[in-house]
Length: 170
Image (cartoon, rainbow, N blue to C red; front, top):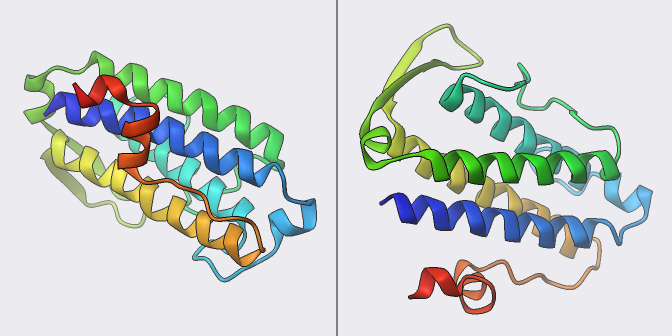
């Protein structure tokens, strides 16, 4: 199962690079235009994904900075956000690579942002949510890009495997 999460971490980095490259082609006004995604603009959506990743990574590792709001704007401009995203993707990959099956099956406890309730669960299902959440919001980022008239991006996991993930195909 651990290789499954390693593949997702690798795929996550690849898909984020594609989304951020497409975002870099937008004008500032397009990048910030509210197109009806849950977090409004591409800027809001990409900041949310980074914020959520940092919140979960803090829960998983007990290390790093984490915002206290899901709509936190961590970076004011795309260049800073791109650098932060790239660093977070490398952090995720390194952490996933440090895990073993015992840790994946172990329980951890955290608090939600909205309530002080403690939640205890196995790490593996939480990682499934972590990567699924990123994919969900990348879909919203993709929809925002196409609503702005940009060409559709191929973000399918299988396309990643065919083009960049040959080590996962063996």
